[in-house]
Figure 1 (cartoon, rainbow, N blue to C red):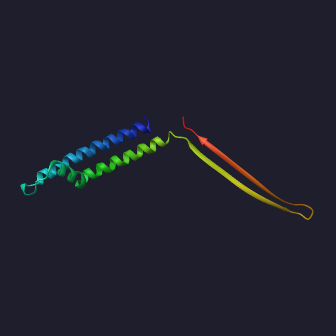
Figure 2: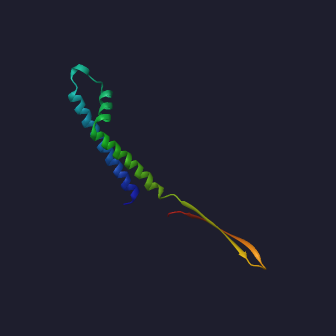
Figure 3: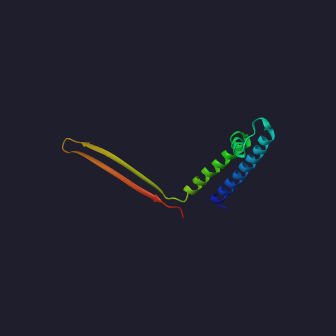
Length: 113
């Protein structure tokens, strides 16, 4: 198993929990609504998705799983790093005075295979 498959399964489980929580919340809201202020199905679903703790938790889990998939995919892309340094030396002798500057740069590109 790789990380990509694990993340996809986790996202599917979170989505299933979200849908189940939404359905339970929908049924709970429909059961508590009396004839005084009847809701349309769209209003009841919207309220259930917004207010039910299980639906909120499932939604947050699905969002987290989606972010984990993005993080797992990032491992397939190359990385680039640039390093550099500059060093200056001054020689101070009575017969010979000289200033030297040494510069070093490196660029590294790494591609996972």
